[in-house]
Amino acid sequence: MANTDLMDHFDLSFVPEREDPFKDLLLKMREKFGLDHVAYAGFNPISGTTHGHVTYDDEWTRHYAKKGFFKVDPTLNEARRSVAPVDWSRLEHNKNFTAVFRDAHDFGITDTGMTIPIRGPFGDMGGLSVNSRLSQPEWRKLKQHIITDLQQVAANVHDLVMQSNPLMRALSAPHLSTREVEILQWTAAGKSQQDIGDILSISHRTVEVHLRSSRKKLQALTTVQAVGRAIALGLVYPG
Image 1: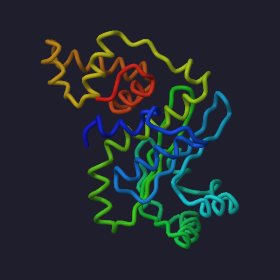
Image 2: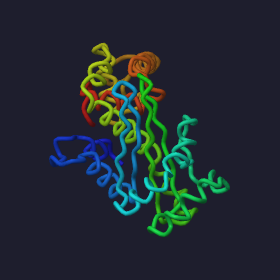
Image 3: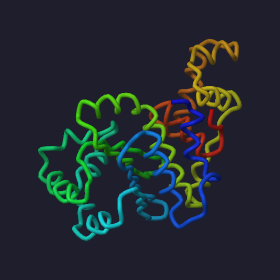
């Protein structure tokens, strides 16, 4: 999937003004990636605010809240303890997982999916959950195809939601050098480190040094996440 197509989802100028503009982003993601549902949950420690945006039907979200599933849902709790995506197949023997999805099935929601954890630089945390009606073999193929893009998407959604708070937005603006911005911009355009080195007439090792510095400044674990944060902050533009 081209970065340009991918990042179109996260330009808020394309989103109509409404009560929950982030739901529109999730609906676009659902369609683009061929998923059944997409859900985001996050916590902003600066404002003390919990955020939730989902593509689920209102009936399920009301039932989920009424039953207090948010307190025990392992798709959320396991993600809080993980730095890697959590495939829900790992949770099938968890009694709380069984309880949540026994009810979810009554609302047409399957237990095939995964949650991608996100951690921000100010103690903010979030998780992007996706699910699908595909069989397990088909789901594994789809996941392999979209996982890299989804991780970038998750970072972008989280940062966009967090930066809806003015104080968080002000605190999270790092100072990147001109060269760091330049390299991140080429990375956003889909260029490899070797490609970038050739374009800028520097070694690929120098490219990696700048990327490492950018990751540190952006409090990102991966280059994909760094690019996502830089785009969300308006430091670079979608490829």
